[in-house]
Image 1 (tube, one colour):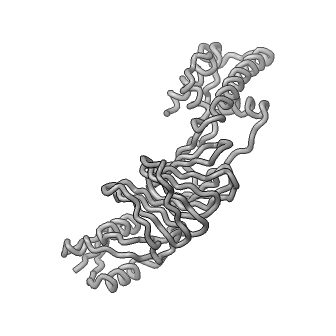
Image 2 (spheres, one colour):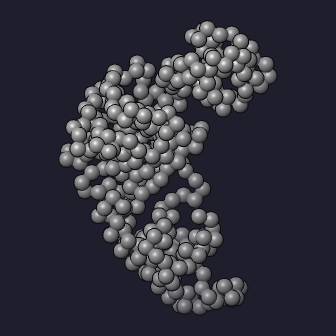
Image 3 (tube, rainbow, N blue to C red):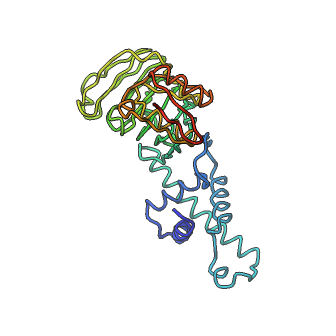
Length: 327
């Protein structure tokens, strides 16, 4: 929403004409940062009623959304302090009442307020969840989680992308990761979930602990259990789970900003390098682009990276200005 939409929504809220969805949207806006996503998303502690009232009023006032009829008609006119305080108190009381009513109704189900995180193409984001578990989100990921977990379970959603989880152990309080194709259920462990739509597969790899995997459209079937150094792959085409040994490459190496490729085509590897180093890679033999490679690249310079790739895949290259020509 832009500023004008937020202003109209705030006025409707003050007048008591906002719908339930609009109330939820405005309350969610109070707890977000308007400048965009940040790398660490803290979880706020519960607030008292007075703190909520003050926060709501301060937000509206700072953003210019709290405006009386007299201010709109005569911007420079002054008011008595008594009248202004009465208006402020009334507005804050109305908003606080609506906020607590809405929060109470939604805190009892999975439809409670959720935060949606969309990771830029050149970032890795770390988030601390409400239960102190941690998740690292890779570039291009879309992740949704509640501000507070409910009493039965801790449920999050990886809508797109790749995430590495370090889950705090809690007996009888499972941690559930939902993707478009499968669900991951754990009590306390660390594991990696890779679910990029363009790849056509969903992968879950375990580092520590024990993980149970169920398919989204077959939840009644027994879960596939994974132990450390094991992984499961779900093909969107075949629609069945394949259990295997996890690759030797460290599953969570990408969390340390390393470039980790697992059976990736050279076409995709070159595409990543082009974006990272702002250049163009030209290949004289198109067949080379379809060859696959598994490799982890650190923070070495581009020349070293190209030396490693050329030695591994047996090609020669030449660097010229902002281009690399592969022969």
